[in-house]
Image 1 (tube, helix red, strand yellow):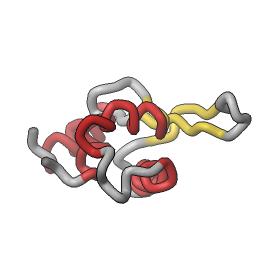
Image 2 (tube, helix red, strand yellow):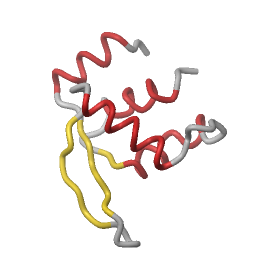
Image 3 (cartoon, one colour):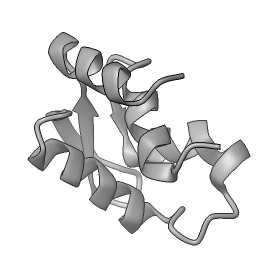
Image 4 (cartoon, one colour):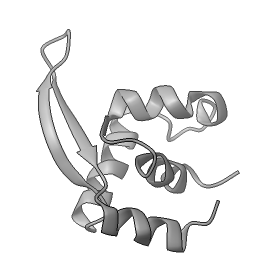
Length: 88
């Protein structure tokens, strides 16, 4: 099993965009027992990937609790980079 941060990056190569909740829903089956599988930790991983140029913020909105929900996407160049360094 890949480290959680790797799984998050690989997931981002398979979708047009995703928010923290989308990532958690997709990875829940394999990673729900990980201590770092929390909303703040997954958001931090996405924001770190953004700071490193691997994903970019695509939009934001408010969720049902009026909390800001950020969406991220990986462009073609980022997808190629992620797939080069994190094999299937």
